[in-house]
Length: 192
Image (tube, rainbow, N blue to C red):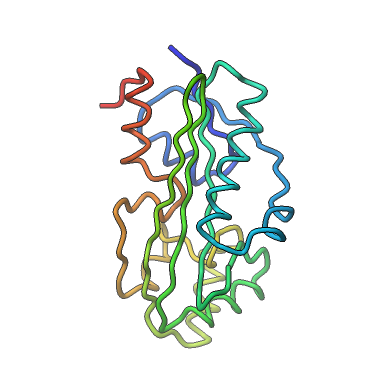
């Protein structure tokens, strides 16, 4: 059986991949995301490129393995929203998103010997109107400082939304398992 490696140290992607009941390892990609963010303004191309570069950097160290890379960005009114990193950054993002619709781009790249599969899932999310106090309370409880768009949909963040339109709800968290399962099956992995 081929070695399976998740090119990420994200606890969210780790937990998602665990759902498939496969043996895998995690390896950091060490990709300078800011380098690409300064060059690519299209969110579709940016997430796709970052997912590929992350997978590629790990695949170069493990050429016989199947490597999964991923990336996400949020887009609101033409502005790409990354990880806020601070409570103030999260408050700013959520204040913009509240009462509005935005998109989340989740890209995945799977590389291996004679294999390259890249795709992007686009999710449309409508956030309900929120007061400043509700936003502050949410940030304090969920601490979404490492999440594009400043929400953790898999936790309390689900309560912020009125509507979500997506093919695979796992893509919101960071790893679309429906398509990934199909790709891994073609490589001989037993995914129930």
